[in-house]
Length: 210
Image (cartoon, rainbow, N blue to C red; front, side, top):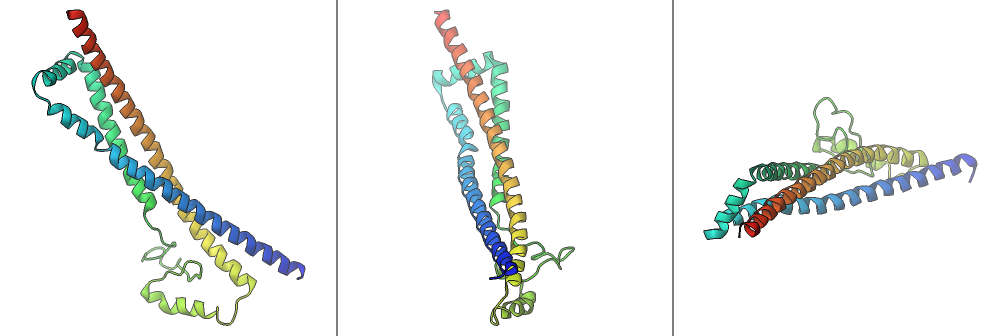
């Protein structure tokens, strides 16, 4: 094998490694975001369940809770505000998570204008619209006669561009999703602290009033 062939072989090996690496990264992102979205689906309605349970209490217990919230109205208001902020953050994080998990095609695929001419047939990403069947089949015919290293490199070059764009979009959505998840958890944490303050204040008032 002469020097040019050796260089082409190394280029193909490098392209294969990059192709596999991107696929593994995309798979890892999808797994992380799927778990995160599942957690967010639980976190979003959880406060409503607790509020529904508290408002459904009757008798002295419900009256004591209402009186405690009224006496510590500022802390109760802060808890309500941060609770609402946490729920809104969870909802937005879910939207970004769904956007991250949404399938993506190659650039120009299924778009009329202005990127309708950016799609090109590719063996590594064999997707095409019915009106592109002829062009795609003509491209596949090249495999029957055998392909040379430049053809393989061109295929990997086009596919790596597509996967790089997809990886960037998924990574951006994942980062925003996790950022809003952290905000959600922080808001819920402040809500718990404010609620604990209201509860402890009511308890100490009850102790010292006797």
